Image (cartoon, rainbow over all chains, first blue to last red; front, side, top):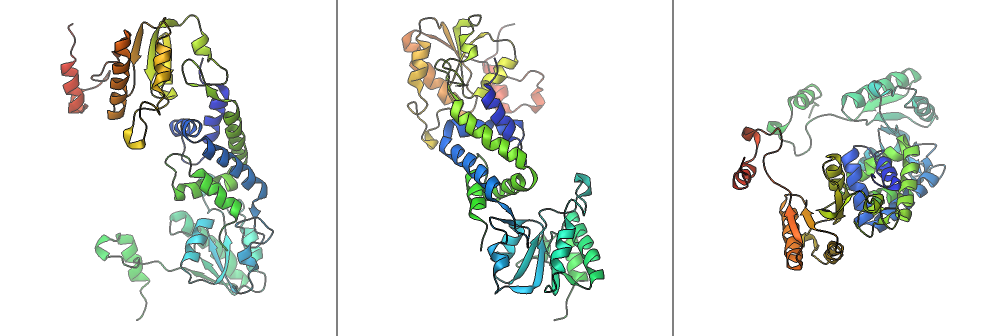
Length: 198
Length: 198
């Protein structure tokens, strides 16, 4: 007497999306079936295709359809710089600045002991092997300035420094265009501590 | 040099979900590919299957895998009562009360002139035909008490009353367990107007 099983299965399957609970999953299912069947078919196809063809670049660990992604294969990028980010979205933001021409390593996550993500789950050995290719001169840590991102950066630097690899961290401070009045005190305090001679 | 095309296609396809913008679509895609490939495969399958087998019950218009859903086919339900709701989720809520034993008609939406949903788009003729089957004695309007739901209820009652079908609207008032102090003034005003003798 309740909903058809294929509808229930769809609602249940939609709950694998992050941040989607029972109510939104239901709303999404109705929307797809009632208002956007073409979009739904496209989504089913795109999901299947992505699962089939996407893998991780063996050099930067980001998503890629080949063994090595176009960015890592580009000889004009500075092979001596390796920038470590948490997610492909972070890489995309850095690329948008057009101010970095080295290579990347994408962790695909961050240390998060509460979620059971330790150094092993994060695959840090893979990063260590990548950084020890003999060409990398400096590893730039560009994980987020959250607790987890900071802990991740700290752990990586502890692992890399004994191997004689130079490690740096992107700067923290007042955002460009930022006004002190509207900046949180933690950021202002850091900006004071990390002040630079002019 | 940007993301692989199959990833871009997936992110774009996820945006057909209601309330999902570019940032959440990206987050969802990374999550599915990185953390929940099994869930992603299940979602692709469930979507494809639902699109293939689900259709609308010819009597109540809700989602159904057969021509007539089990609820409409149940002879023990009161064939003289037809309750009109906006969405299958509303039907499910009414069923959960265990206090209604008639049949339903699911509009699969509501009048919404701003979104281009008029009486024709909502398929109100189908409801009129259903209500004129000769067995329905009373149509109970259980659309939401939003502006659009109210307008929908008004329009349906205007269409049904000339045909000699009894039309009622579910009651509006203070929620059960509700305290006046925490109830909005509009609801209190309505509860006053619609007061009943005790």
